[in-house]
Image (cartoon, rainbow, N blue to C red; front, side, top):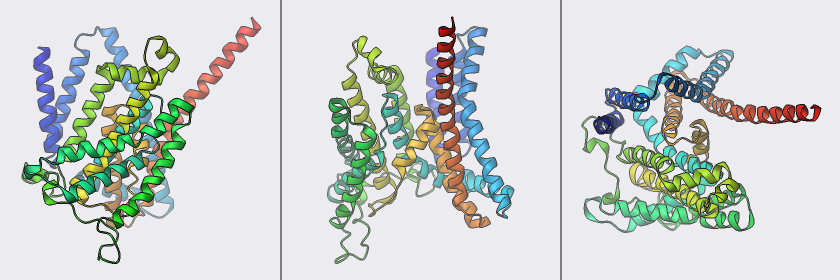
Length: 410
């Protein structure tokens, strides 16, 4: 029975995601069925009291993001009304654009955010803040572009090699900041941010030396196009009716999210990363090498950012732009926080961010509502989610303070 449920769940999930990505919206029904089977599997062997406790825990976990999103939409609507725009018309256009009309744009916007969100989440699980994810994204983009311009193999056989090499270089870009963290205690926020600026500045030199020289090129701000053999397979080659811009790298992002979930929660490496993130001292007493776990977490984080840049170059842009200002590393922080650093939650948070961006563009075109409203909504969501942690921190401090006062009075 267990094997049958797991097999059916995996099959429904894979088929549903593939067709959903191809804008065949009945695919979401299969995804929901797969999620239902997962919930059934989780609750099947629990008694009534345990099931109620688990339901309560799930409800609390979902409560803060739901309240944050609803409150942000309400605040955005009030701002629209005060500015003379109709919030109902604007939101109608936004959701229609993001969920139906331009669903493929939402998906393409979300894909790099899934990778960078996972990167931030893995680092957070180890108690680290990989704020330099943007720099690692640049490194992955540059390595992938350089390789894809110069070399190829038939039938796309070179594409996995590009992913591995670009991801490895992006991971290696984290070695010095992580070594400084382990050896000297230098904070990774400072060091990875400095490395991010180095990568961004170097990217300009890279573009100029790979086709973007103003003296010889009519496209001075982009590299030469990558070889056609190195382009990721478009989804329309598999499913008729899929948008021509949607590529199979989208499916790779979903698969990687599942893999990272498995790595963190079903393997010893993941357990050690989480243990170090919870309490380094306690982890060391259990024989866990904290330095090694920190290094592994940051290497994985860098590799994921490298995959993000590679997917954009090989799947969507087919070249690299000077000063691309992607923002995927910075936005990955918001995605990870909104998802509470859960790999599966990162997928949904990235889709929300992608939906807001795509829907906001459609809203601005059709209703003339300023797209800046979307940035206000995103910022408000992030602020309200962060407020949860602030309230929790203050609650702990107040509780400890009152406990200490009570002890002294006794």
